[in-house]
Length: 237
Ligand SMILES: [Zn+2]
Image (tube, rainbow, N blue to C red; front, side):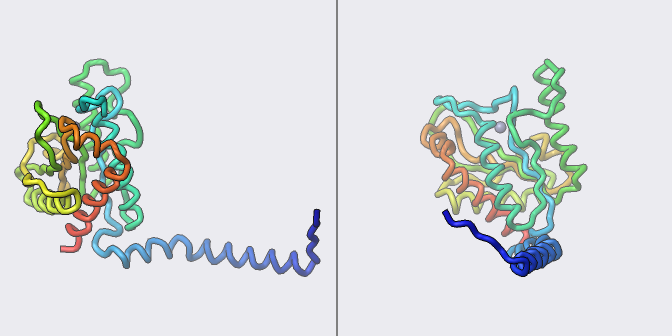
């Protein structure tokens, strides 16, 4: 075994080097990272975007034939999207980080819970004065043949429509052909939010092939990348 000793002079030198590095990182570290991201993603950097992973807690959302839960898919994709947006220096507000809803835990009436949950999702976005609201869901239809991602907007919102159309184009481009178009949908989180909002139905859990894809982390990343590409385009136009 070999033991290393440092002379007094070496110790002083190391102390100085550490101090200098600390001052450099402390002064420039925080500024440097977002600054490079701002250059890489002009338009979107510095924005506040709310990511609403649909359902959660007592409310699983749709369930595939194989037992895949919509609430888990939506959260996984929201998490991937959060990573991408954070790298672009976007301030991301997650409506939920885990498996829960936003209703009072004491509320046992399911309908009241749902209402409370949705109105609190909207309130989070309003209080954050968010620039955009992106809600993530998965679709379900009786019968296995329907497939493909589809985006919805509130009929009375031209900006929401514009956002949804761009997202739809990028979803089709990244995930493969589907003939679906962005459509108006009367969903509370789209209707009640005052910022441009879109709901992305990432695919059909009632389609066995698409349900399988949606369960794969690689595909979840792909969906998040498609939405991210749409958001970049929305802010670059
Ligand atoms: Zn849903």
